[in-house]
Image (tube, rainbow, N blue to C red):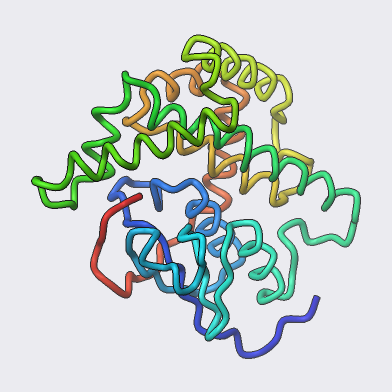
Length: 256
């Protein structure tokens, strides 16, 4: 895979920097884009805003969006595919189609199943909501903060019902989450990476699971920490994909 030269200017449109060491964004999909860009060594800039502010690049009003010169690439999976083209190499650095296919399956699992539990932990779990509200909406003016926060919460809990994550209630959701963690613990490699060599599966699974390991979701954080093989693998991926963060090109804005 030959890399075109020169690599164009890259700007990652995203929600605000949380100011948490080792966590680029409260959006796990934005974390996924960050870690892919860092691993491939592609220089990029950051542009912050609420998701709706980037609708001119993505009509769904969702982030991340990567601006590749005049081209807007939306969605974390499409961004990872595009930056591999730009870098002239794949994450797994092999042409094995079976490996790429399996990595894609794990990426889809992370982006759908694991992310559903993350959304539930942040937006539906009453134990976490005060911390999430304080962290995510801190930059907003105090007078409008409660209204905006409640609107976001209602919308996201409704989406969880549609995804069947929360439909059967809290107890069922977290029982299923523990079952998923038990399965991931048994599946976690004792050394190296998820499929033997580093792939997009590592980036995707890490991005969503690492987002649980924050102070806003303490019960879920402790559940992940209680799985030693899974935690050790997360730490390996963290070290493998973390590089010096790029300079911001605009001031900090609200995190979504």
